Image 1: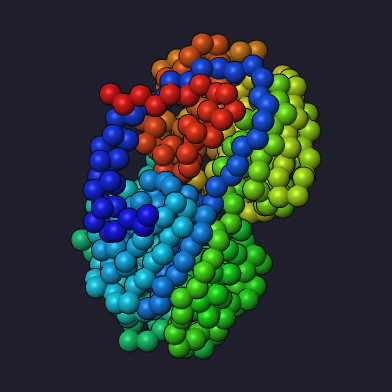
Image 2: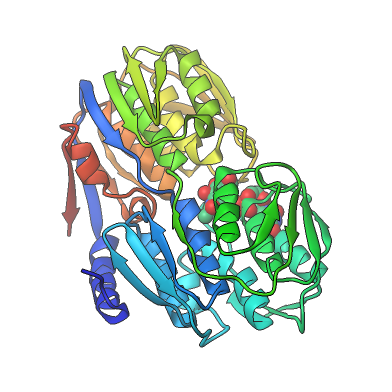
Length: 437
Ligand code: UD1
């Protein structure tokens, strides 16, 4: 059955109340055998949902994960005029008319990637007003590069009263150099340029697979984009975009989380529905730790003894080691043999999980942008708190290899990005219980 907008809204508000009070009780495991399937990518589907605002025709999206962030994006595009229907992991979006050009604060404030609607709104209607996304648990996260791009395309952009407002009679293609290969700015500028007059080039563009998937989606809508996945993306503006059908790429961060989980135990775990080339740096580091990883078509098999070696990691833009797996990998390194270092170069404040891991007995020190990890034999159970999405994933991994049952609080962060986690882990025999107070 497809849910209507209204039915969906009621379900969402009930779920939201429950989710904010929820915590996980997690029991440790010794062995891990079996298989686990990765869902469609959170960071892939969110900009694709924003991109549906570009056309009057319906778009069908497959493999949409059932996540809090997806629900928030549904609410945002609905307010802007979208009719959204969901059935299982299929979503149909039709935006025959943009009803509002201002994104609602109550939703945008919950999720930074709601800023993705700015580019599509601007190019379709000539005006977009979106609340400033603000900082978040992992740092300041400015939007100067998005704004630089919109201005280069000919928009006037004003910031005031907590909003960013962009206006343009018409957008005209331009050459835009990004000072940093920002994923969000690349996606937003790419969407804005789809219907600009002439050719736009984005230099020093982000090369993440989610940027490539968005370009594939936009091209299916009739856009003319080449070079995605390289430093230079070229967009030739078209008059209008059409509807299309698309399956979201597999979530490489979810896949990486499961690979790390497998590595931490006596395991033979098949992680299904992955694109191995998207996970090269993670696979390389796991192998360096002493884990066996083999490709089996679209699946990866991780075989581990659970006894691992220390490694050093530096997070970098793709194809470097992803910042989103820094916290989960730190959970692993907290109990390997030897000392490791993790240097975080993408976000200035992404170490909130360190104090929580230390509550579990880990020996981790922060020095500037680096975490120095002294591996220990065993983690201990404790009450810990998920401070953000990936910090939450790290605590789940730590809990699975701790002595005793661990309680992870504030799991609404984890609900933002891991689809059906209890069900997926439960199928592997893991005892993870959601407790709603
Ligand atoms: C996306 C991902 C997030 C991931 C991140 C880096 C989504 C929904 N989120 O976030 O999971 O951790 O990429 O891989 O896809 N920056 C600026 N000015 C800007 C924009 C960004 O200075 O205008 C800086 C940020 O502060 C940060 C760095 O660039 O230090 C990376 O940010 P960016 O690549 O834009 O990440 P997001 O798109 O926000």
